[in-house]
Image (tube, rainbow, N blue to C red; front, side, top):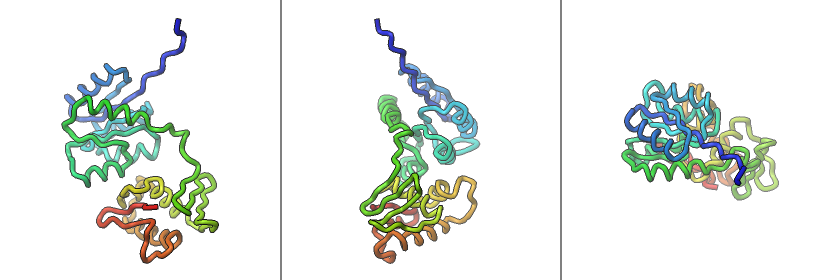
Length: 232
């Protein structure tokens, strides 16, 4: 007789104001063995996430009270669930903004439940939080995340607190375009009300320290009208 304890079902929070879609997803995910809770607006969803700390949050982009992108950014600051964004908007820029906000996946409506279920399984396979690396490397550039030190080859660089956090965010998302607004939220905090030019100034300072030729940067490139991308 098998006496092994049953694995506790994964918990999923659905934040969707379309009641038909909300209940359809909740029912089908429950049938697949997940523990599902729902919310119909951004603020209620945020409070449920804080209370329950679900394994996965499914977020509609357009929500009453607090939009899905804002909820996503707050969740990324406070906890580490997998996040799937739902939206009726399908342009590439919209997808970039959604992913830059911290989402793991981006699903455009309408979609089949079979596809959505596969994306749920993929999102839940994210590596556990306790496997976060202690250092990040790109060529001869090394970030020591524990000691908060930065090395370029054998040279230790003198970075300010914000410069370090900005570089960490860029290197952790190598190859991805990060918008100025996202970098402000991630590095300066959700409640920061300064100008996005703050990011540009710190990027210039970083380039002076990590680029071989700051006037022709190869590590941190500018994506016009959007933000920046770390190339390596």
